[in-house]
Length: 458
Image (cartoon, rainbow, N blue to C red; front, side, top):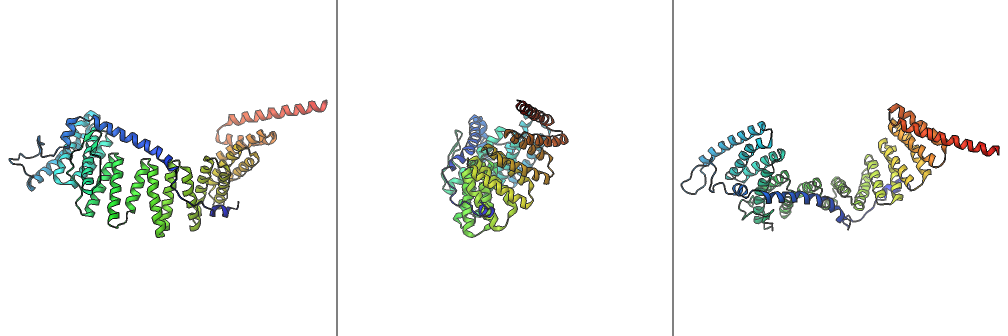
């Protein structure tokens, strides 16, 4: 098939198919393990420690830093200023202990102080508390503090549950058997800009705490808020998709990028379309959903050609060929490997030329087409010479020698192994191997000559 016909004949069609189910397998297992661990830890958490941390800071028993109140009331501005200074000192002491601590036991006093600080920050409003949650969550993961992580996660989920209540979204009131009670501290104010900032901060906290399901839920709500206001959701959708990819939820990432791709095509945004196709292909590839990956990759191939982005073609053609080979369509794989070689040679991308020929040689051997395999490795030697790749030339001569030996062309096999030995000596690699091959072929040639001589004498 001519190269231009091959490259222009992209596969069109839908991406969502039954094979999407397979792409959920890897991600769902990984997420299940992570979430299961978090739930189990929440169940094992000391109930008193949990109750103390989640309780209202003004409930009894109160922190020693709080003033004694004769009647129940909020703290005055002066009392809050005094408390703010005390919390700065608390944070300074905790940081000093963190720097001095060498063992987990040494770090206990530091995190006791930090958790006190986080709890008391509630008295300054949600923004101050979220900042403290994010900062201490990062330290807890850095220093491997499971109790602190569990407590911070429970508090973040309390806040998220309160937000979902105000937004009219159903939620799970318990976590790991822990009843999170009636949510009160909601970040939702009714002012869209403020609500988005608060929810974005909460999403980052969940990511830091590795509570990915909650982070995904927050991002989905941010997208819903923007859509309700008729605002663009692109940045939030990309963040959601990339979060799914980072945590191996490949099918979920693909679903988001499919929606973004449809929007980009409807709006005629070619640069966005290419980016989404690239991420879509990556999502399916990682999920090992190869039929869907091939659809997105061949669509991407068409777009690269239409825009003249030829430099991106060789790598993509090789990947497409590998996927066809993986789904047992060797003829399609051969066609794309050949195209990858021709295109890469034209562009001077010799590493991709060599890769295509190596894979092509192996595939021809696998289907027992040794004539074409020989041609592939002979071309490979020329490419590796262009790239000054002695290692590649050594291996190419090795493969040539093996094939010639299989075909009974012992003289050609001997020459190939001798050429391979030249590079093996130069690289100080596989010298013994090539020496053994040369001795073996030489012995076979000697026996063949003796047999011919005996036959002549008779």
